[in-house]
Amino acid sequence: MGKSSTGKDTVYKHLLECMDLKKVVLYTTRPIRRHEKDGEEYHFCTKEEEEALKEAGKIIERRSYQTVHGPWDYFTVDDGSVDLDRENYLMIGTLEAYESLCNYYSNDKIVPIYIEVEDGERLTRALNREKKQPQPKYEEMCRRFLGDAKDFSEERLQECGIEKRFNNRSLEDTVSEISDYIKAFM
Image (tube, rainbow, N blue to C red; front, side, top):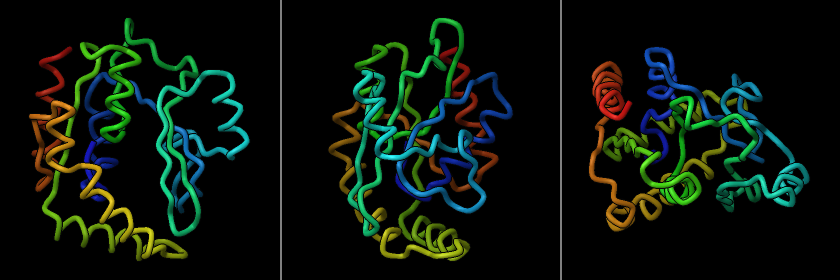
């Protein structure tokens, strides 16, 4: 977990490569970005497909964001791909997702990993990433940046019991530190 542009995706990919962890692929209704592949970063689906999953009782948790391009939903689905009794998993989510997963699977099976980066550096990273998109969505980038201040406030972090934090100044150091942390729970 962490605010946007803290390097969650990059750290996530490195941890999956160097550890015996399975990937949890979330679902979203947002448009696919250049270089993303359906089923890898996310399962990209329509609102109708999301509604069918909801009606089937398959959605564990869901977040909806009112973007400048309309509502985008992100959600975790009980699609049979997760078996916590047999495997260890790694996923990217929000504090809300963390709370819902703890409620669904139980607190003792979910370990939070919170990544942070100084706000100026985060904004620079976000801007550089957005500039590479064929049609940059700067307004959405700014909305996310500002929304993160509320979503990941100190109050919310404390409410969720997030005590351990990993500052992503150096990818190699961050991956190593998180890897050691995870091994203590395996």
